[in-house]
Length: 64
Image 1 (tube, helix red, strand yellow):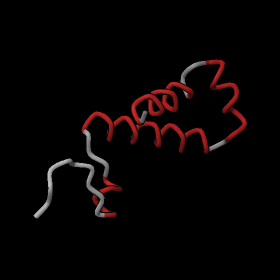
Image 2 (cartoon, rainbow, N blue to C red; image 1 turned 90 degrees about the vertical axis):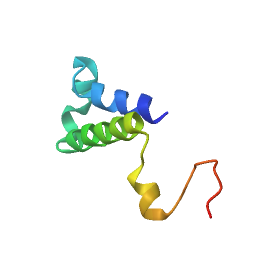
Image 3 (tube, helix red, strand yellow; image 1 turned 45 degrees about the horizontal axis):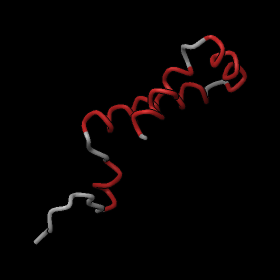
Image 4 (cartoon, one colour; image 1 turned 60 degrees about the vertical axis):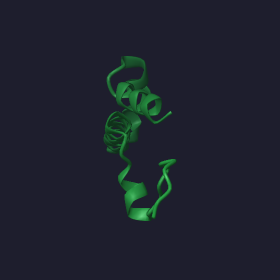
């Protein structure tokens, strides 16, 4: 899901029809594109910095 949403957010800035919808958003379109790039990066590297900061682990192995 993270990868798919990241692709959509990044592509929205470059697809003419979507870029037209985002034209009135000002700097928000850059923030959405940056968020999409972050989502793509975390999906590709399989690491979520927020999980590390919050101490959440989705690893099925038991911690000692």
